[in-house]
Image (cartoon, rainbow, N blue to C red; front, side, top):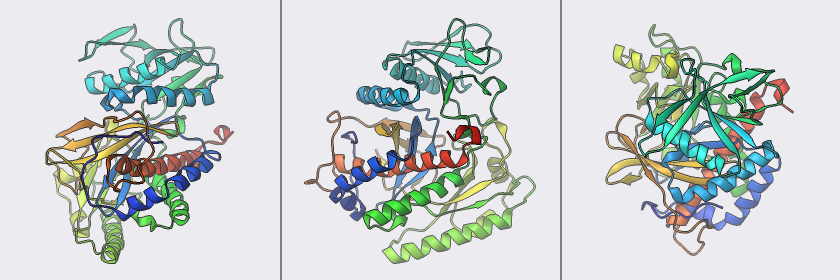
Length: 429
């Protein structure tokens, strides 16, 4: 079931949404069957783009950092879903350790940590927050904009277990994407579950592997539902040896940009789409909208100027970008107050628990919105939870967001498959 949301934006009536609406019961049965075979990630957020003729995910985050952007009305659903997830992992859990990113100056992110801690606490867990920041050697309170105080505590390791002073947790929840690698203090823990698993971090994970898994998932789903998989799936290619500073890999980039654009142009011709096709070139690992550019012709990636090369060369934690994904760009026709917007759907376990619009006042409908100028517009409940309305129009509020939930859950399922395929041998069981 997907929350009934009241801030749906108007848009063209999509045949795709009508298909989802007509086959809603079959879709839910299909998802239930998949979750009998695969374990969903503990939590996940998916960035979607709705072009009016296509609805597709463009990014899937296994360490979501925007729980503070959800409407407070979603809190009961978040708590219920978190209870389900915790019971699967550690049924007798009493203590949970939450380890966030090292963004102590980013108060928006810290508000996310506080919201996440509140959700977990209301599942009946004692929740405390441990930090990987080496300079924090004693409990450190941080004041938040809403008047709350977040207490960060130094991690302690004893007898192979990780915890805090007088705090031995059953499970450790990471809200840190491990872009710089796995700290030694998190390795080889004794009888403690780390969620998400360590191999979900960006030191191992690649967007191209996720979308390869998504391609498989969507192929099965599209066949079952009788739809063209392209309608919910962006084409992509990969260049694995790139050095922007030294101009290495430009020909690989140009060749793959041209190949993806050629495939997209053929689909646009098939469906009578008049938009100009484009691709997004971005780092194959990492988040925060770093190392991303919009490209409309292969010639644009040849001979990049210094500013462009510097922008693309470095990702989060100052890490060198050596692998990029060339992903079909999906236009967004969504707007809020005449500003470009895209929906972001949040899930805990296998349940959609909320979402928000990422709105950017400075970016266009064929550009990355996770950039300066963005803000967030929470989605609001009309009722607590609802099935789609089969008597309504495809883009009525419950039906538009049902479609968003379907595609987001496909990305969630792909993430589950991706983690299974990349798990180290000791983690398979």
